[in-house]
Length: 253
Image 1 (tube, rainbow, N blue to C red):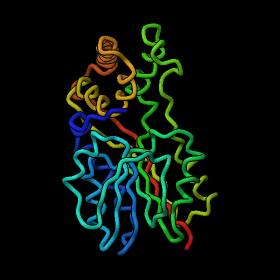
Image 2 (cartoon, helix red, strand yellow):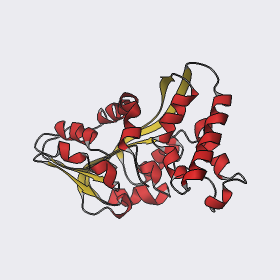
Image 3 (tube, one colour):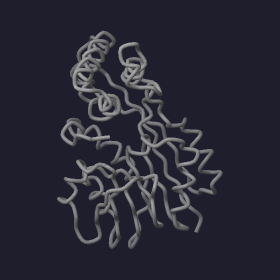
Image 4 (cartoon, rainbow, N blue to C red):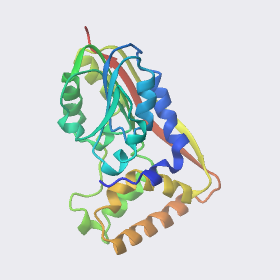
């Protein structure tokens, strides 16, 4: 997918709050080899690197448009590379990911694979949106599967691979994980109106729906989405409760 950094960062402070919560779960040690999966523009990866003294931190992202901004944050001990998370190479003392792994399928296979790249004594720390049952997400799936747009989505609307929080706890325990923390947190975003909710979702979820469409169909899809969301949320301001899963687990040394 082609990401738009300007659109994504329209709600910069709201999107940073989960990162700050996730960072609190990191066990700060000097001299670690760390990787940030789905690092985006690199600004938050820099914050991660700044908390890890004398460490080697790599930011990995598949989006060239996001990584174009990462050069602002490069310093000794911090670099950025373009690549596919699913094709991760190497071994690390810290595998960190903030709001990226929800785009990868089959988490029952994904996380054991990531676990194999974690050094003994290392830590896996992850945050993922889990808001796929919210009307803002359900509506996009329904539109993709409607008569007007179904031809563009032969496999139907996007189904989130994110599991219930207890499934991650079970999986990570089964992998032999220790010091396990799994949280489900609702972030209370107060938006001006339904239009602001549209702008929020345009920076993330709707990217997957608009990209396959030619420009005229994009306009129709977005117009229908906007109209129906306004019907669902006519009030001003709008409370947008956004659920996220955060977890931390350590690998025995």
